[in-house]
Length: 538
Image (cartoon, rainbow, N blue to C red; front, side):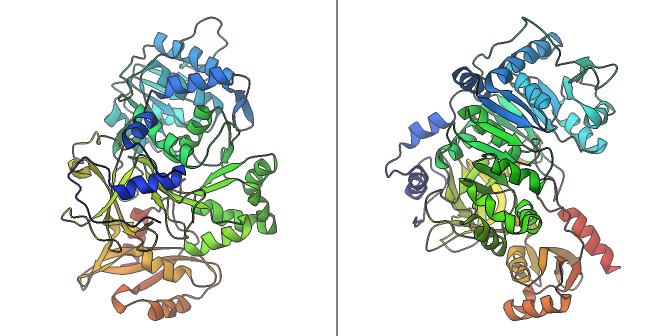
């Protein structure tokens, strides 16, 4: 249990409550903050991966789409591909856009770019030409690497900065150079890189606005994944399985964990409940998932879902896990899934403890190396139990966006997440209640969507629900709920809201959809919902 006392956020010292939280994750009462942070962020990704490969060259590393490579094979392929990239003109400090399909050749390309000292621009293979054009404009890549339709989309954009479009194999593009060929002798060994140089140029989800480019250094990425690996007792015996896109931090982080520890990971190219279950039956020990994946696993596996209880570790992230869904997953797994919290800009920050008490609806305590505060709009730290913006500080946190319109991303040296949270008075755990930009101000009163969503979700037969604020001449904003129902009448949901919510919090309208629009990692497409709600006003 951590009880958080008041403190100032304009100083350099780590608060004792954060250090106590680190101790809970690490299983020890005394923590050397300086030494811990130094160890978490030491080195660079390419060298760290190569070191693990040298230690366990013949051990299975990755299985993507049914193809497998050992750590040694992956290291050798990355070295060969890195030499090819240098020959094609890639330079340290420049950027290379990689179309991140869930395939082994893509991972080889990703590792090769890191080894050259260039930065990887993570491109989702399903991105539209408009989305890719923004990425190219913001990052000015010198090379583009990929395969399939994703590569064709990138190749069709205006690319004044691009010197070469590179396919992964001869089949990718007739006129493209080829990265992965049978080559003998030419290889680039991993060499030390500046830990503070950008390894990845990632883009925020953009579900409430235009995506922003967040440069993530080797130190940021290493500190983030090492923090959770330490807290979750990750070892070389781990076998991770997930069906998350590797163009996003959540899915890519699992690959980082496998390559850093010398363990293995199985990544499914798309969600398949039967495929995930089969991986567990074959010995997978850990699973990364998002709430919608748990929802589908329970619905599609039925009684077989109890077999997921073989997992040592099952985590949930990339969005809030509804309490009722968490309890249903607990009934199948035998324990609550380990819910955690993170962001593109700051990696993994908060987690329920592996061995301590897990609380449904809470994301837990600051992970090793991370400090947390809840602040008012004026920048004052709020007392425990009051809702405010979640602030994060630590070696996992990036140094700022590339775009000039993001100067308000930090308060002193604390990253402003834009999320609204409350620290539980009993346990000191963090509960995320919404986004600042999603806060609904109706008739001068504040409404947090999560509170309304939790009430509507309690209705029998509700599959999914999202609450948004829609412009209103009368109220400023009005509360509108979108519900994906199985068999519950909308009138019954209105009765639930009347019983549990103050009048100003109750949805003015409850609209039904076959499914709530979400991204590949479960982020709600708020912009689309607002368009739908506004259209319903006409």
